[in-house]
Length: 147
Image (cartoon, rainbow, N blue to C red; front, side, top):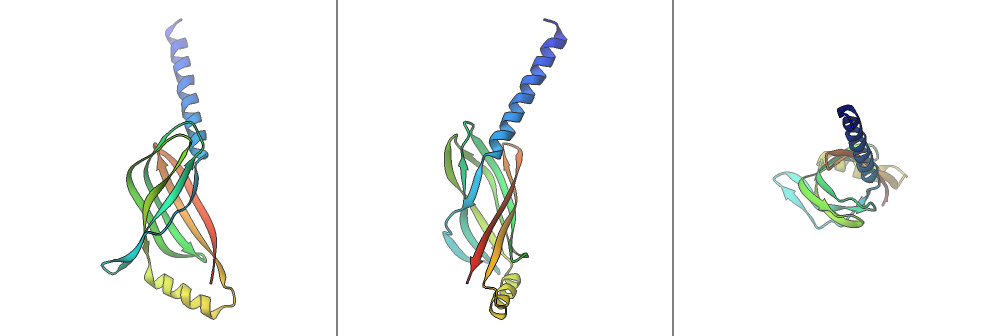
């Protein structure tokens, strides 16, 4: 075999590996976990919670970060984030701890709008990005919240 053939095979195998990793990352499933603590850090309202991640692939992932904004009825009400290395094994699920930092003024405005309008069910949306093994995975979760 000549050098060009070996280089071509190497590039093909690398491309196949990257394609498979992106396919596996696309199979990750996200949903909200339990809230474990609500309180204040200085003047900021915060909640400790988790995002449950299910991995249905045969590959493991190291989640290096998650950052997302939280919208209630299309109004920004907070931000979710976590940074560090968290390992999710193949064919498993786990709870990634995250912290929500709330924007109090936005939340107060939304509470007032719930009582001044007849619509009691509004969408809560979490929109951001997860970095798993340096693959940027979009996170877009929508829930209907009613009072």
